[in-house]
Amino acid sequence: MEGHLATINNSDGTAVDLEQIQEEKMMIEVFHNIAKRYFRGPLKPPFNIEARTAAGFGREWYEPLVFKDFKVPD
Image 1 (tube, rainbow, N blue to C red):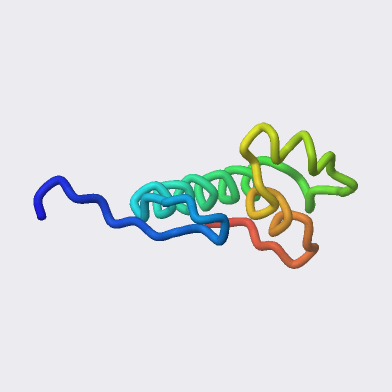
Image 2 (cartoon, helix red, strand yellow):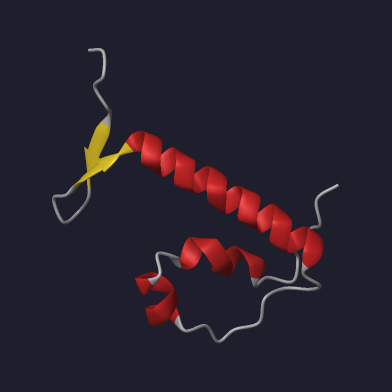
């Protein structure tokens, strides 16, 4: 199966590349680490969810940074 990409189907029936999902998760983790290191304190809502979603930034990008218990990486 050389060249075959693993895919799954979204609830709307569209195919999603698993490698793409893993890459996005990695980018989100890097973003969280950078934000925790250089931004003082948690992010403060409210957020313009519609605009963030339109720009490709789902809630998983920023909601974990809202909580007061986030820890700065070493």
